[in-house]
Length: 141
Image (cartoon, rainbow, N blue to C red; front, side, top):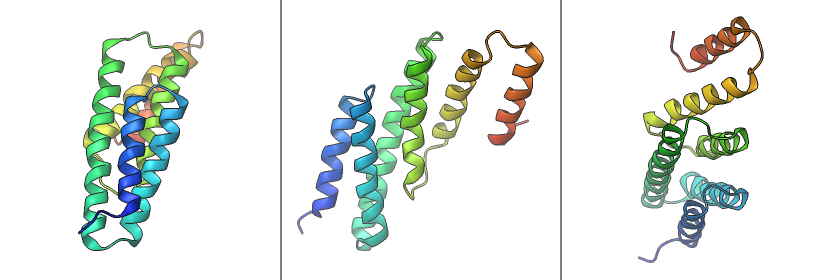
């Protein structure tokens, strides 16, 4: 049975996104590919929906691993790059799939770094309060 056109298009766009993950165009391609997968999940046959979920989960794992590696490797990533990575990881929230546990941890790690940048020069108390709010969002105390 031939693969659904939307799945082929999604694969192509996701591959393009993965190759150019650090750019705005890569983020656009990622969002487009994930949108196609979400459409297949909602309207495709059970087999097509399963394939779309598997693709979304696979790309989420790979992208999170790459971004997690970049964030862990360079503690001084510039703010615009951190913001971009956060948008990339958030793109996966728009698809009706279960994301790897590392996705939530990565979002929190990136936001922690952003809080460090945004609250530079503010009081330690203000920064602590913001980090506490972040911990509550992540379900951690």
